[in-house]
Image (cartoon, rainbow, N blue to C red; front, side, top):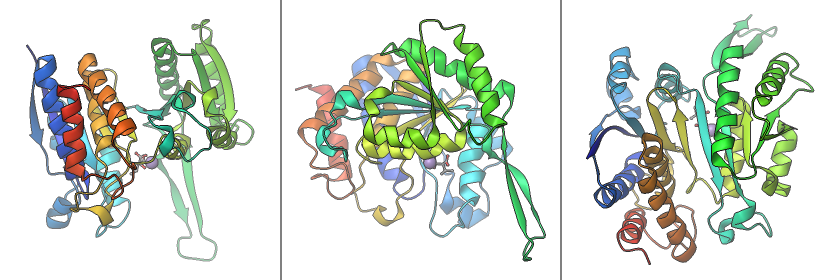
Length: 355
Ligand code: IPM
Ligand code: MN
């Protein structure tokens, strides 16, 4: 029997509540699909930082490298200045483990939960491949004359040929494997950001020659947000840089039904990947048993597919689809018609006795 080691980082706010439900569901599929796993919990997050001043050290990161995958709840604490935990923990993990892809499936499960008029599940079903290790996230820049009237702050978008190419290659391979309409759209800003996007466009065009079966397209990022609302059915796979990917995937989450259902993977195809609901720590809902755990459950499904338990991952997704179509009153916290743990139970029940 296959055995995996899962590093669990419940983190802050509602993270622990949603991860609990995710683990409940993973336990259910493990018995059904015959695999074993050991889940080890780590206390990285805001609480530990407030007590010890520690975000994450090198040794802890090294330790994570022996796991099959990392399952993350949320990072962000209302009593900690914005930026400390995000860079010290979340981005530190992404960068140190070289998780250079941020994979964000945008899929509408129930038209009733879509804020767009007349869009059906078949209209909203695409994937964003976001570069996850470079760009504006590289923290390059400086202040000049800080605190004076002549202050200048620069923030550099750092793009390497290697970094761009590996992301674009991943996107082409992913489009091929996904095998839907076999269309890959580059989302950029070639009309203004003429250094970075020249490199992206050239690399995209070169790699495209190796994939004659894949249709390629280009959209500026501003237009992309427009198409997400107007014609989301145009998209199959989108590849973009770190900052644009961050922005368009929040919009993507909204059109698929909100943060309650949006999951993402931070992927290192050769190393340890990390899966998370993208909604954040939601401090105002913490401890109330009202947050929607489906995003975390879907992140768990992505994790299982990534480590090779494809059937188990698919079974979770199927169960989530059924629950979203037949049970949930809303996907928003406090309005679901069920508590957090009841939603987890519904998914488990649906997996064990599909109806
Ligand atoms: C995301 C988040 C993070 C990001 C934050 C929390 C640093 O918004 O995963 O999209 O900007 O990448
Ligand atoms: Mn974001």
